[in-house]
Image (cartoon, rainbow, N blue to C red; front, side):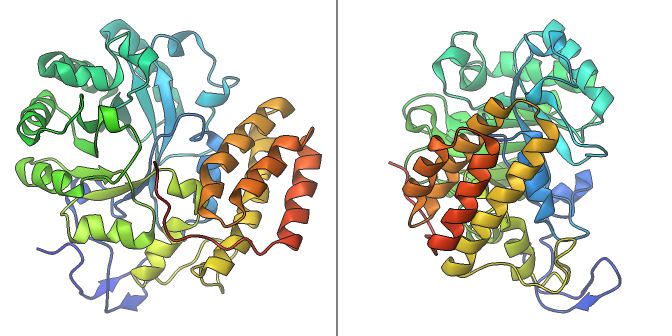
Length: 373
């Protein structure tokens, strides 16, 4: 069945719509009605960024968001309340910590510690291509040994007792191999993984070039568990396409969410979902390049507000905001100038004033897509 088939559906609040509906995918078996997610991103997926995404999410929808990659060797000795990467918002529920590790004693201790903040599930990183993770046989290096990788899944599932997913790449070397990927994902499924996310670029490609969504389609056909697509999903249309055309069970948005934190709102509007984010009930989401340019300034100021709530260190706020701007501003005509402006601010108040001034002086329209070289 086409997951985007038109049918009548009663939305939250009793509203009837008769055109497009929420995609019906295998993630429903895990209780996820909205199959759109925001990826774990190192240096970006902190509690303030997750709060920003939620602030743009229409009422009644619960997209899963992730923490950034967390080392299981470090995590047991860190404090949840004061380690910035581990902080969560009050009553935050639809979030998933992403674990980096391969030893049971560290996985067990990390999971037990994180259970106290009630995550929705846990994710295992088998996709990171950065060299220091490879030295420990973490990240994408786990894809070189399916039995070892399956054991890591088994340990995590045993200690977590809630949904466990694995985020992996299309290959652990220079090229993708469908046969190897099918064999590897079959081992993860047998070990107890509840769902998989595939970034269909091999390790050597890192984040460059186009993602091979056809690879996700082939794996999704072969597996009984849900398979989510990640990589090169830049627009609401991309997110809907990987589900409707490539048979993914979900669409995981990464860097584009730093440029369009309102992308969940855009997806919902494309599906005729009748509700807006809280406080914006009588608005439509930004879709034109000019509207997105204006909204980006507003989003940056909102993010700084959340950062001030959760992070007491001013230098940390400046560092994280600059990385956020460096990542997302490339989708905007004057993005480089915006990022450069952010690097000159010596305080959070100065940064805020500079952003407000930038918004008044430049229209800064967005680009629909960017190409990563």
